Length: 248
Image 1 (cartoon, rainbow, N blue to C red):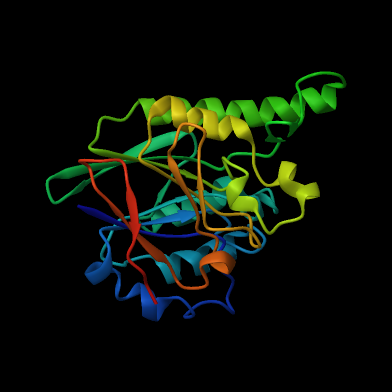
Image 2: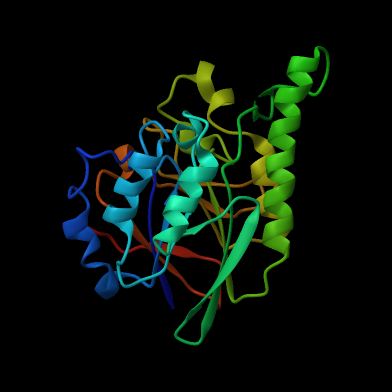
């Protein structure tokens, strides 16, 4: 059994420091690792990254994150990444890591992802150069995620993104903005690699639960959706399943 704590969209700045920490201090008794699905900061500054590292560093369990769109706002994403990594937190972008957990190998592959929409209501790689660039960006992130997922040898495999891989976890958001909240290419990559679980954030007014077309469980762990410091999911390596155990 592997227990994964997960949250996204924590948007840490100096006024947030200390808000999550009491619940985070309980993590070693509740979970084996913490995965954070992007929007670590409010405006993507180095100072905010330092605040995030202070709040989510040194927890006694491995912490693995991807960046979100907010973490790119100030065009300091490379500096933000370095600041967070210097605190001992793993940042993934088109890459994977393997965590050894009580004799099991947990693989986590991650990317920020991008928008573009879903079957029947998606952008197409046709027409103006600007549209081709938009769709090409989504395709590139999805291809990077698929390569990272397929590169891992493990007992349980998790896909970690900021943007959504399916529309079901966007229910509650205006339909008009679905194309800016995720894309079908991410779900296709997750299915191609056979992940056991997919986690994302970004959709603050969305729904928690969904599945890829191939049946992989998807969980929207954006903090405004789960309404707590983290949820804990139980991964059973013997079968592809997830069970919510709960967290304060």
